[in-house]
Length: 96
Image 1 (spheres, rainbow, N blue to C red):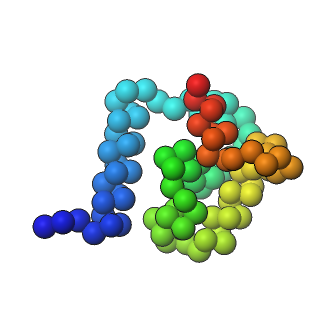
Image 2 (cartoon, rainbow, N blue to C red):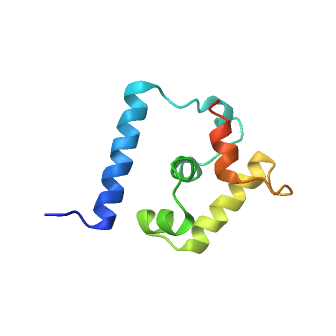
Image 3 (cartoon, rainbow, N blue to C red):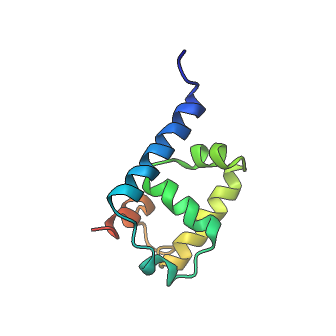
C-alpha cells in the first residue's frame, strides 16, 4: 500500500534525522550564539533539508504566515534581513 504524501514526508524527515545522528551531529554552537528559540531551530533544520514554507507549515500544523514570521526572525538574527542572500544557501554553507 503506497504511503500518502505527508506520510512519505514524515518518513523522509525521520530518515534524514537518523542519518544525521548516526553520521555526525550538526554544529549548533554557532547558531545557538544567535539566541534562536527551539521553534526557530526546528524551522532552521527543516529549511536546511530543503523544505519550503508551505511544507513546513503543513508539517508543524501552523499557517504560512507563522513560518514567514519565524523565517524573518531567523534572517534578522543572522544579519540577513538587509541582504538578498538565500536563507537555505546561507544555512547550508555554515556546515562547510
